[in-house]
Image (cartoon, rainbow, N blue to C red; front, side, top):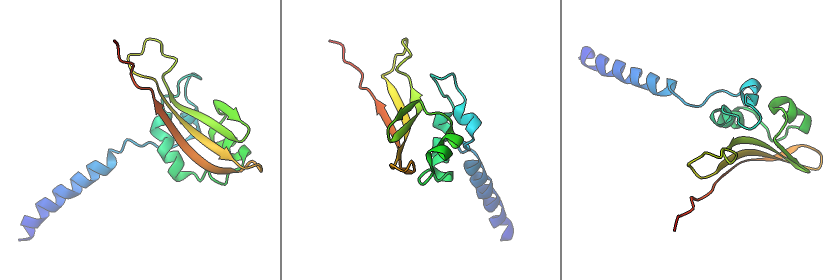
Length: 128
């Protein structure tokens, strides 16, 4: 009887290991986050979820954010924006524009009070 239970148990253990080991999410590190040519950051989309779950950005000071993430692509009075995806500069694209950014909102004391992942895709224009 134990032999009959052993084989299915081993099979399920192997399947569980395979499923959990094949996760697409990659760990955040600053070098991967900043990898790119200034217009395109190909690794950010893979690691942004890990960044948000493993690093407590809310409560960080402006200086701590810059030390962790580097210089933002856009800076406003009380927010920083880090580009994740932006294909709007690819003139030969066949797909609609797709933009995705990590936005950090600051209090007047330069402390992060809110984080947001903003994503926008333009609808394709219909030809008449």
